Length: 360
Image (tube, rainbow, N blue to C red; front, top):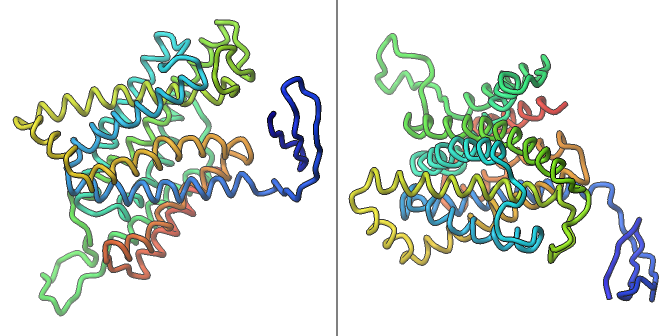
């Protein structure tokens, strides 16, 4: 027996397809994509809060090693259910090459910088700098795959940078004894934190373009294998269309590169790497935070983001995803007792508006 939902009608059918009961239900799918997109933004907000706590307790490299192990485990189970085997199926050489490169840029460099940024400036400002991924993706998309970049996208870059600038710059107090020729504005955040968070946003945008190239090669490999991407695989435990399964397989390739890269960096920069890992996995509070960051980030967040694009346009979905810097303000202020100024709130809103201009 199974449940089906078609145009607001629930159909209960038996195994041979015969309908047992049909019942009308009140169901309005008009804004289902937008609702899912908002859930994704909330999910990534929770991820950032968990990751900030974990990174400050165990350090960015041990955190990322543990997080990649958890991510790979969850993705392996997912692929086993939707592809029949717990690893990327049908991926050819070019697919692996581009997705591994994306893993280096987006995971190894980008996530390392993001977690380091959380240590210095916290998740609230860290997520603000992630809005840099949109202009970076637009620029790299133009350079690498010839995507068009509209004049409005250029305006969006300027608006996004303006919003970030408003959030991190403050006026100097003349009564504080500043030098006569000192700049009118000063940074309100540590320079290291700004540098790490900026690099994280840039790497996410660059990694997104590399992932797109890898996914195009993956699609070509599936077509070459004579597979219908809109149909599930015959030996899959869950009958999910193949095109929905492919991004999870691509994420697993990137996560595998992330685990390798973070492990190498951990042992390269730390003589006591084994001790750091042992301390990390025995810190119960930190491990619960890593688990939360993994569940709400690469697992639930990615899954729901894919689902959202099935019910609404990519532009609307991406704009709503970018609300995280605004949504995180209140919980960060409550949980971490951070002082939030009106200028910082306005700056975050302006940055999100700038991101939305890329998708109009």
